Image 1 (spheres, one colour):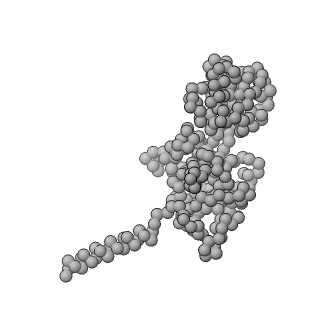
Image 2 (cartoon, helix red, strand yellow):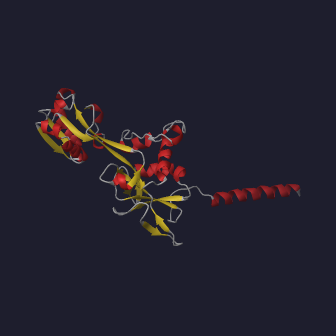
Image 3 (tube, rainbow, N blue to C red):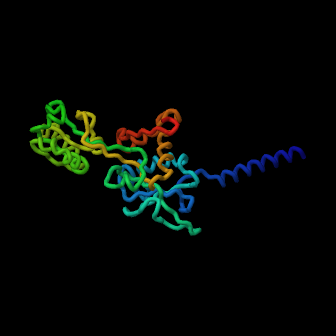
Length: 286
């Protein structure tokens, strides 16, 4: 009889454990949105930050949020990446209404959101800089260019887009050049070939584009940068997410919390180099 009771007790314990795990499933992506789903919004594909591939949302921001969700979820049970219109107001506009009539609102914006653009810093709160895209000037030993001052009288190439915008702002540097040759981002290999051949003496480009080239490590980069574009996560003004996400990334990166830096490898996976200068001092560390 005692043996039978022990067997039944063991079986009952096993059943309770199974039921517990069935009811306490690990947090992850949401199949259906409810008021307990953290909505993480993005406005458009912007690789490598966020993009859709075969119906699945992927990218640096996506993997980072999947990694830190457990540390920032608060009362949320799962999360969902949702595409919204460009005029969607984070923390205000209703994305959808769940089956219980609860409004579901996105409080976080990802997807390569730029800081310091127009009045965006006044209207929203940002995390610390997560990714940085420096506007740099690339040259070679044989070009004779060793500083920005020595660009005077030289032919300079520039990659259209953010690099060209940065060079245009530095009118003194641009006006001292003999000529400026424009290249599209997809023509970075041709631009570097012209640099090697002496057709241009230097090339102004952003690091995202430069590091996409196979021969990126073979060139010299002038000291100083023409601009530094900061990408971060955007929240409703003074929202609690700000400190929570800064803290989560800090812990992911810091050897105080992990055996190794787990943040930088994610950055390098998507950008091909360490494109982050993330720095954060938790309140107790200040």
